[in-house]
Length: 357
Image (cartoon, rainbow, N blue to C red; front, side):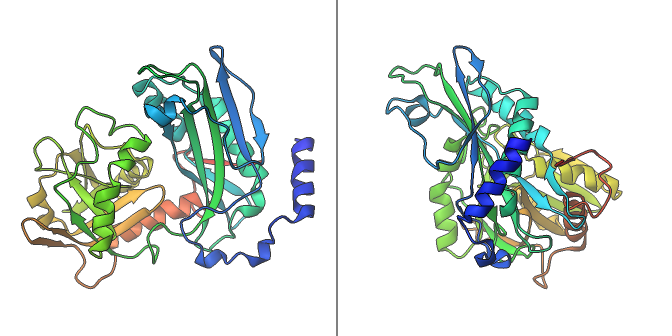
């Protein structure tokens, strides 16, 4: 710990980035160079020690499996600077568990939960000066990444892997923060197959969403929504978030074999129950959208993005959830409750938060 504190002190003295020049309240959701990342190599059937690195690049063999056969996965979580001066990280063990599930799905070695948590805490501490101020609207985004790095020409799993974590301060994912946004159903693209990798956080799923996402943006929408790939009847998810709808005091979210299990959505389901709502995880036919009083997209990056309306380009149907352009009352309660827990403004009764020493 003494060595770590010395490294941080030296870095601050060097003042490689003048923190006073950062406009915390107007940060985009983009990459900013920070001081350090951490890395762990998997070789000879075992994980090595956590290494500290200041380089932003990775030396990589041109035949690495991550480049050719998609042996890579990643996670996303956040650290918060709080009113009491402490730093909190939200549901880090859940991210470790989800990455382990992905590793099972694409044949990569699982990093132990305790090592994952230790690495997250270390990289946040090393880059503590980049954690945005309380109530700035910005957070420190944490990106764990696991890639196959050994050379293969045939389709086989790698024998060596690299786990790394970098961090970067970010603003809201959607412009305006907690504000309503329009979405669009795009039928001619699928994000993932029903029995494919949709339940895993792998880059291929996001690559598959780029074309539809660009089309949505070009048409003036915040993001695209996909219907289920098998029948094209049920709501699946958008390119970067899960869907939920509110009606009759019930929180409804899709159940599907092609949806990434969102940690934010899991948290919101628990908070909805805490607020006295019924929670249903089931198939949602597109036509049921007309019955929802509120709707939103949720995920680590966006937290909750309330939906003003969803257009179906093929049927010319518009499903409206906000007539006055404002987030609905239940979505607002859920958002405020979740944020209050993340920032330590309300008790963490479910044990979701890790506080840095």
